[in-house]
Length: 222
Ligand code: SF4
Image (cartoon, rainbow, N blue to C red):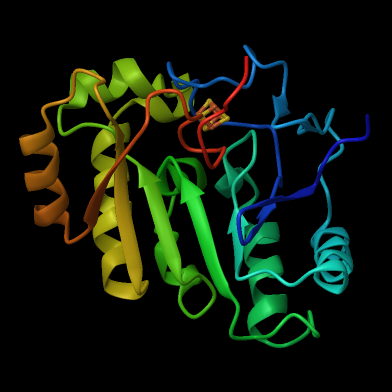
């Protein structure tokens, strides 16, 4: 089966930009589910799509049926391809992806490590292009964060602080910033909510058997 670069979930169109990750999250199911998500093959096999390919496919999907949200969320961390991600969002917001409306809500689901990966503040570049950022933060405890997120070596040192820095910056720039955590994952929910408030983000808890950062919902069959 060909890899899905775009796929639908509810009223959203999801964009599978890359299979590369800056973390190896303990709750990730991409290997367990053999890169399948709800019957879609999300294994790009190294053939990452260009922004032009993404927009072309999105326009084809729009012609088949409209959607309400354009979401960067696949089996990989979307900000590993930050320039391409922003090019796609820019095409939407400038009307270059017409007939997809420029008013389309654009959301990024992320592990929040973009600043660490790119060695600079990345949230400012998202201004006017990204409407919502959902960060899989998962805990208020740095040691638990490291155990759950398992950041890869180049980005592990100080990773939790960098994620918090990204969230703080995003809150100043992006209309909706949420931090998510797994339900029943041994997380101190009160402390997590307190940290969310301190960062200026909204907390959201998600089910254990969803696939965390990347896939949008609980899988119903094994
Ligand atoms: S949950 Fe997402 S970011 Fe984490 S390892 Fe899996 S695919 Fe990568």
